[in-house]
Amino acid sequence: MQLLKDILYKVAVTKVLGSTDAHVNAIIFDSRKVESNSLFVAQKGVTVDGHKYIAKAVDLGASVIVCEELPSELNNDVVYVEVEDSNIALAIIAANFYDNPSQKLKLIGITGTNGKTTIATLLYDLFEKAGYKVGLLSTVKVLVDEKEYAATHTTPDSISINYYLQLMIDSGVDYCFMEVSSHGIHQKRTAGLHFSGGIFTNLTHDHLDYHKTFAEYRDVKKSFFDELPKTAFALVNVDDKNGSVMVQNTRAKKVTYAQKSMADYRVRILENQFSGLLLNVNGTEVWVKLIGNFNASNLLAIYATADLLGLDKMEILQIMSQLESVDGRFQHFISDGGITAIVDYAHTPDALKNVLETINDIRTGNENVITVVGCGGDRDKTKRPKMGHIASSLSSQAIFTSDNPRSENPQIIIEEIEKGVAPQNYNKTLSIVDREQAIKTAGKLANKGDILLIAGKGHETYQEVNGVRSDFDDLKKVKEILKKLNK
Image (cartoon, rainbow, N blue to C red; front, side):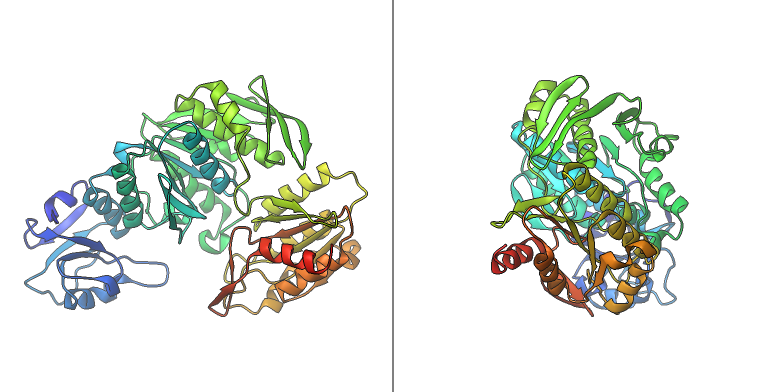
């Protein structure tokens, strides 16, 4: 239990009705979870305005209400705190409530369109192998030292972030690597956190259903670097033209990495095979188990981060050579019948292009590349034809199917994907709404030596149709299907 005046420290308060000596035993932003003596923050969300639930929160026992607009009816037993921005207030209050845990460890944020999960997870793996206690906040999972918790969002809500960070402090964690999404930045979930470093991977077409324009999407990402303290580092990929934009106004130490451009950290690919990559990293060769140009860039970001955080350069390279691919990121196996099956989370045009170009770089030219891909429902529609164009252009055969249709008609989603197919590629495409049938058809078409890419869902182990989630794991499914087909 904490005093209200302590957890309001640094919050932009415009008015207080009541005593700030009130005791608070929980912070809540979902009125359904309000309990006695809790502080309820009314947020203006994308679809719901929490101000409508203030009365309900009071009825359930909230003793403090934090809001942007005071309600017309006030309860004399409740303290009302009017603030400029409820989202920022929630983030700062949450940090104060948990005694600002981000200041007690090295918190590194990774942002960009692609590569966040791979970089965050492999940094966790590298530092753990180097003997440190480490934390991870990612799309796939949350790890506190070695204890795993389920992840619900790429960037959790402010209360959850600080709760997990406090668990990390209690567990003696030294470093935490955290994915920072554009949604999380825009909704101020990371406000009030002290970052020791930030990493920018790249910026490509994604989330334009939420941000509306690419410029807004870029500027939201940039705001993360604008807020970094001068004691932090800002590590940016300057192969992406937006890398220099990210650090225009940052106070942090600017550091660059690249494959194709002049940078502080450089990587060259010497060999690229399905068994791994031979890289030259700042003049030293290292063999790694990961595959593709995009992973060479990811690994360089990992090397640079570890070096900036003080690890020995040779130890970093030695551990990098042991790192395995992340769940759902270019996971591959060779079936008994000699078919190479790859499962990848590629759900943006750029990510799909990267994966298919990697496959085409490695293959000898005699194998067929059969791609199964869809697009999620209730998400950015403008990328759908681009996905269709890329899949049909860079594959021997493309099969369009359902991803997570959510509330949309999957047939309509597929028709929008088909609009991107060039006339010369029409005869290379099939459309099969049922994802399992699409994978089965791909398996039937594949012969020894061929390469089968199942793209879009990666680590996800479910499919969501009309609000109902059912078990669906691409990796398990393709293994079962190829085994049944004796391929």
